[in-house]
Amino acid sequence: MLIEESKLALIIIFGMLFSLAMALGMVLLSNKNRRILELSEELMREALQNKELEKIGAVLKTQENERTEIARQLHDDVGGLLSIVQKQILLAKGKGEKGVIDTAALIGASEFLQESIDQMRSITKELMPHYLLKLGLANALERMAQQKTNNLVAQFTFESTLDQTVVLPEPIMTHNFFIASELITNLLKHSNPSCIHMKLCLSISNEVLLQIQHNGIPLSHADYEKLAADSDTFGLENIRYRLALIGASIHYEVFEKSAQTTIISPLILNDETFN
Image 1: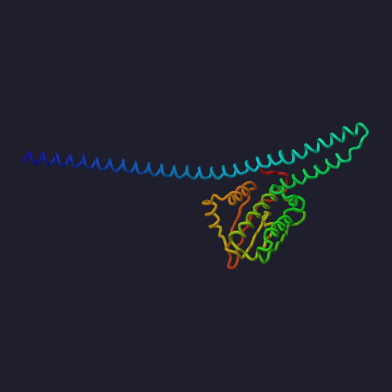
Image 2: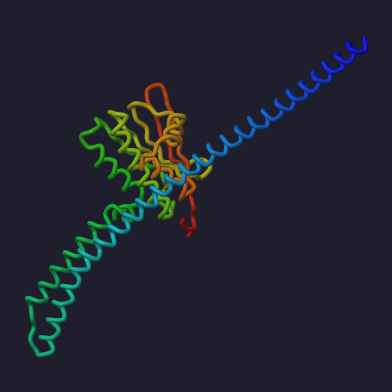
């Protein structure tokens, strides 16, 4: 009887030890699984951060390449022409000091100076269309869109209800212009519209609204958010970058027979600039 009780006690002890070991193992396994999950989430966050850094890096690299190319063109093309102008003027000056007017040198200097001006205009054309500052955002948008849609859509219309007394800061004009240009290009490439209507106005809350309505293949705001999150295309990155610079937002709406994209920008009536 004592032996049986001893065996029973051992069985109970071993059972308790086994249960304890199992419980400890389950706790350790749970902790391990939780740590694995934390590490996985950490890796995902790092991957997303790295992806964002890569996108920002791509934008910065593109901008740096553009600056390098502009500097090269200014040095090689414009700088070379101005050097010739300087030589022609010095030649004319030297002869002028001797009482001789070198008409040929002056004409040559004038021609090379005009060529350097043309080169400068060519280089800066893509950076800042001169008619944007000269004619204002509304006229520049209408002109740009008409040029892009010419022969590609059956109908393009433009409407502006902005009062002439409303002063738009240069950054608002510039970034809205280039965002609209990118959106029109994307519409023509991917949506195949036959009609496009663009409108520039102020909202009730005094914000600048730039609306582009079309009858092509629609893009919802959810579609845009997904594309913006998944796509590495420079066009979308460029739009997001410019929106961020001026504190603007973009919204996509789908209607029964049309779709609309709206850029909402703050209206600033002072000399504040955006870096």
